[in-house]
Length: 164
Image 1: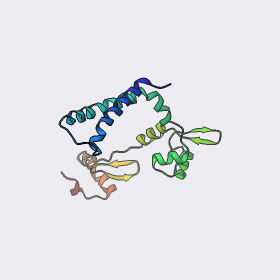
Image 2 (image 1 turned 45 degrees about the horizontal axis):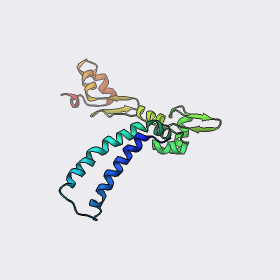
Image 3 (image 1 turned 135 degrees about the vertical axis):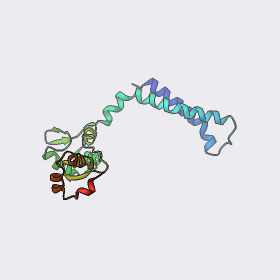
Image 4 (image 1 turned 90 degrees about the vertical axis):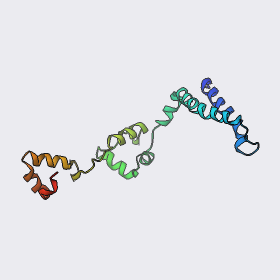
């Protein structure tokens, strides 16, 4: 069943665009009144597009979250299918759905998984190990608290390079 409000919004965009095409394809010259038509189009399109998206959300959402194969999911997350399989077997990959022997992924799960792995680097930090990040401020706090010498020995960093 057609979504009549969405079709109406699409027809409004189409009508505005058809009125302006001759000005841009060279079949007719610009007139002073064209400026108002162009401004109307520029102001109207974002609202009409938002209206169309709102009116068709129930139709578009199921399509965008359709099941993806491992190969398709790998393209979404920027990894190879082999790496995605390995992560799944190590229980470190994105959530998946298993139908008999077939593995599929949902785009929303892939995007949530990528977001959960997002890291924001700390300016001036030194990565010691994979899970430990020590900033210069932390080391200076240790020095100020009297445990600086032990930390410095571990880091093999001269103490004068940490003074403020």
